[in-house]
Length: 77
Picture (cartoon, rainbow, N blue to C red):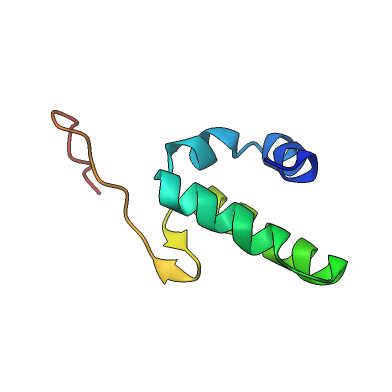
């Protein structure tokens, strides 16, 4: 993980949310951010990842719901 991504995750308090995501999402986010050629694009992508992790219900602008582990209680609204 690039140091600037690690720093952003820690500073924004979403490192745990990142670690709870499936490995494919973690890898997708990192590759997507680091493949950007321009710094403004990298920063925009990083900001999107941070927002999605903070919200917990989006992945690459798509609706995402984490799978419950067996035995975990249902959330009531």
